[in-house]
Image (cartoon, rainbow over all chains, first blue to last red; front, top):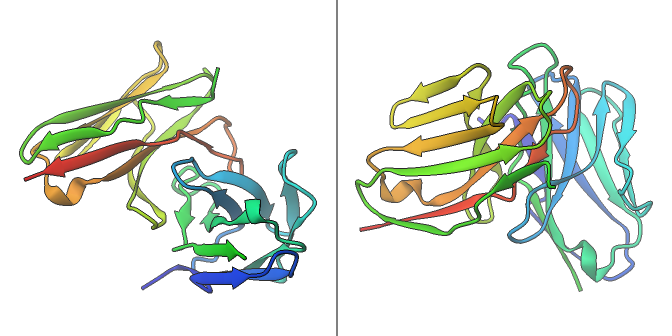
Length: 114
Length: 112
């Protein structure tokens, strides 16, 4: 059974049209992460939540925002998608003190920008 | 120097072969290390974690050399299903909830 669930699996949006990607988890993990992965590249961390504490990576564009209304859910909002934002977006979770920071990934949302 | 470096490959090996990947990391304070497997257009999945000198799971063996700051992954008796990209991942910090450093991955193709 999937423990980190991302919806939708595929998302097509238009240039400049806001889009929201969602992630839910059944693991009750404190930490949730959002990564962007482009073809043949390593996943790039955008930001993460440690409980309700938001931690933004220094080079994450302002165009990317996130919300975590509760432990189980986390959203990635792209306010004005550009062609360069087309990528796979991966959500991951981890539990501090358990498994020494193993991150469990969702299946990803592949975003296309037209 | 990049935080985590891997040979991108591709490594093309016949079924049954033994193949080894190396990964180097720059932060000597790094505490934990992982190998993830990623299939094409899928999410990374944990293959092995390495906290001390090494770990073994069936056909897969990971070894850590802290003095030289590298981690290796050995795959014995390769199967066609082993074809994937293998990501070397390093936790640079001692506490949890911290950004992991990913290598770009090493591509493996096992052929009949």
